[in-house]
Image 1 (cartoon, one colour):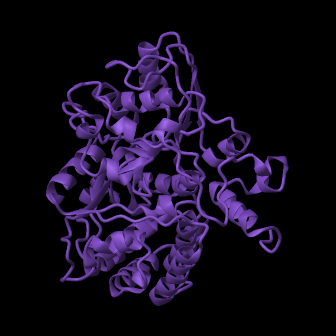
Image 2 (cartoon, helix red, strand yellow; image 1 turned 180 degrees about the vertical axis):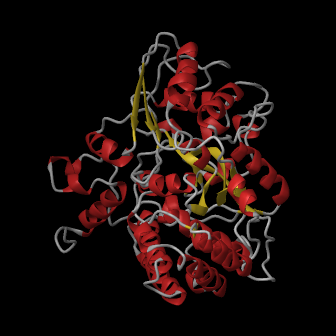
Length: 485
């Protein structure tokens, strides 16, 4: 679609719709259906809780948002590594218990944008969405379009477990901040995830291997694994190159410190060309040489299953991996997590440092029929009962403090717990640009594959990404975000 036609305001709207994932609808009858389209005069006003339709129900301690007792609720869940039984067997029943007269409609999909883009264009949106997966919607663009409900009211509401505490006081530090867009909370990030290299501790023990702590050790390990006819390291280039770029960015943050990731998010001039990133990219490109080129055409589950078959030693991912693969994992396979190796002896963060952050964004559309119900659904998720049930069904720990206490942990989660203890305060911070600037993130996926499969050098990778970041920064149709922590 050419940008040469139309007014500047129309161009801006087309760019925005493209970011949300509505490109196919722009030229059709639905082209004017997003009522809060940005124009050349600036972004649309952000939607807030006060802009939501009134539920008509009285506000009380038990019903702080004033949810109508009989208002239908529609929930759309991304059915990926977390499954959706946590919704159908835990959260939705808890909502029904609180509002017996309400009907709850459940929609599960792996194609969030594809499923919801016609509905956002037509103004028929659900009340709560797990916006995740490869086909997720662009949260930054949704917020700019006035499509997201601000969640301050949720975080300031009394918690279900202790009405004397606000919900924000019951979650892990950094949880609320991880969901900020334009300095206001729009995303409820629920899963407390750690990122690193996953391996089968039984396989390593059998071969007398220990996970590498430096990249020199990593290269030596690669030779050992290769000699044993095992691919030392691999990821899926077709749909999960972000698993690899996470490792590169974590390594750069270990070299320079967390300010690097804050500067990446803030589009600081020249940040993609810093020595820390060049060193990290070069180190990972060396490891990429041990991957067969065919991995670029595989999806994540194909690569993960190969690891379960003992064909891959180290795999980059987050702590949802074990649960995602449970149906493919042999009984003798024991998931374990090791941090990314140190690149230099002068790294600011030690080997034990891991990236740990709140992830998996849940959102409430501002124009939902029952947005108050959407807020209450999130409050139920953030109760100890809701969070504990989520861990039992999904195998993943939530941001709710203490909710998993006393649960029997799987090998992977036990390893995660040990890694968190070893890391202590040495935590690599999150990246927000992934939610804020979708086109920049998409370009990073492309450039990561080019780097890891040997088509470009680390220097070219940095140059190409800096150009992409500069393009994002200079695009006046994109609302720029900023964070300080």
